[in-house]
Amino acid sequence: AYRNVRANNAELPATAWILEPSDLPATANALDRSAARPFADILDDHQLILAPTELSATAPLKVLAPIHGCRAATMPGFSTAMVPALRLNYTEINRRVHLLKGLLDRAVSADLDFVVDHTTKHHLQLDLRHRTAHASGGLLPEPGTAGNLPSGEAYIVPYEGEIEGDPTATAGLLPVQLSNEVVLLEVRHNTAVRVVSDGPVSTREAALLAAEPARGNIAELGLGVLSAFGLKPIGEVLLDEKLGLHVAFGRSEHFGGQVGPRDFSAPEAVIHQDHVYLGEIQPRVVAAAVDLHFGEGDSLELIRDGDYVFGF
Image (cartoon, rainbow, N blue to C red; front, side):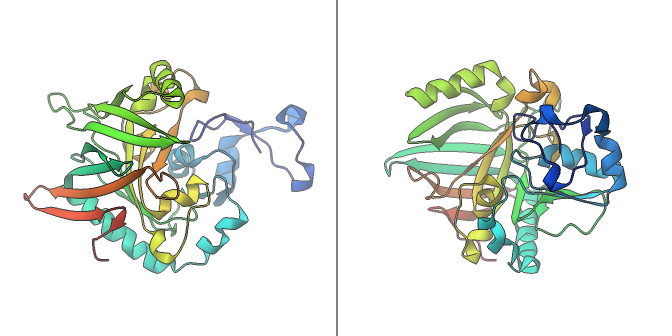
């Protein structure tokens, strides 16, 4: 057990407690401070880590697992509704995920076209140069690795422009439905720089972005595969992002990007937030088309009207 870190993928505290489930107190303030142990020692002493936490510990454990030589399965928000996802054929899931990883590794850019309310079109280009994709196929056989469980996605951090003289080409407009409102984000140089929509949710998101600019970093293009296995969203990102297309903002260094805790104002402000483009989650926004472009000049139609058209 450890104290509440207040945000998804925030840094883990320096100390933690080893408890029996029956000893879990109502609040962290009731824990015996003298019994706290360095978190690093706990990771050193355990080969297998399961993290069924309320807030995601994926980012810090991806950084810590190679240091301490453990394997970690992160399970934020895990519930009984996710048990069917643990019974799937992960050999097949892993195969599909690695096919998508191979495509993302070859791609130099991705074009994403969205349609809002069946009428308004928006376009976002993601620069995928200088990056290697990741495969999260649910299999973690090697020490020093960490990943989600349930799993089933390939993902990549768009190029963030860190090479001098080589700016990122990521730019455009990205719609995100939050509650019943579609928030429209203007993206320049791989960063959401302002909210161009109106409404109470847009006003709130604009204030958050102004207070914490690192929240605007486009940290991930993700391609989940579990919809093909009959699963539906349950309202928890851990599972929902594995079902299809998603775009994440915020922290990226745990995936090989450049934005990390140092870019936020405080440890509790660190965030990596996914937005999943499924009809059940964002009914007003449809991913009309996702195309990958390769260095050889050829392209691949990957998604049309929210569904893969690429043959697995």
